[in-house]
Length: 98
Image (cartoon, rainbow, N blue to C red; front, side):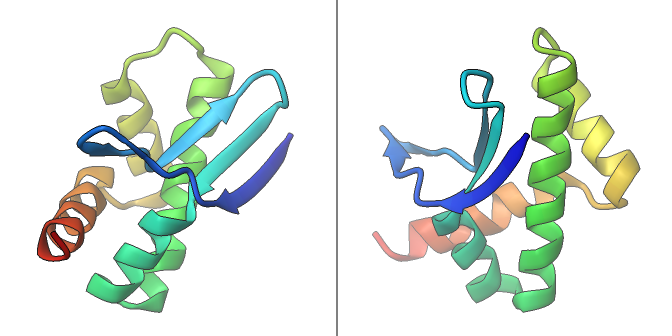
């Protein structure tokens, strides 16, 4: 498995925070999301966000049919951080740049 931080772009009104690609066995974390967290919360939180995103996608890798809630719970248990807080921070940064 590889992990990359790359620009995943946007999907309509939503931003893709991270994805697991089973074809490449790769987890990709959106560089735009990392930058948004860093602007809103600082470099240390951006590192934590990246770890949370990776754990969330690792769960999807191991459990392909799992719900987002289950993947969030796994990431929270491993990293001790609520993934939803990052989603709010990213949305607030994105909304402020419209």
